[in-house]
Image (cartoon, rainbow, N blue to C red; front, side, top):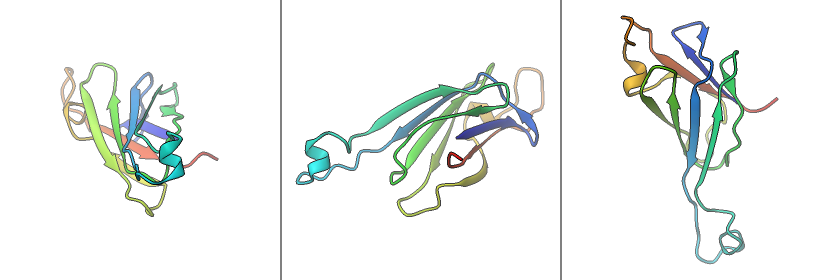
Length: 116
C-alpha cells in the first residue's frame, strides 16, 4: 500500500501513483525464459484516505512517481534487495515537493507499507 499526504497530516486524494520495478533477468534462469523477471509498471489512484494499492515485486528496487492534483510529478527511489519492505515517510523530489500555486507548501510525502 502507498500512502500520499501533503505536509504532516493531509491525505492527498486522486493522486496518480506509478510504480516501476527494474528487470532482474538472468539468461539461464527458468523465470527469465518464462518471462516473469522483466520490468513491471503498475499504476493506481489514491482514494479519499490518500492510499493506493499496488502490487510490485518486493525483491526489486522500485521507482515511485506520484502526480498529485495540481502539481507536477515527484519521484522517489526505494529499496535494495534484502531491505525492509516498509519504508517510513519520505518527501518526494521534483515539482510535487515544491510550493503549489496558492503559496507555501510542506510538500508531498509518501510511505510504502506491506498489505495487511
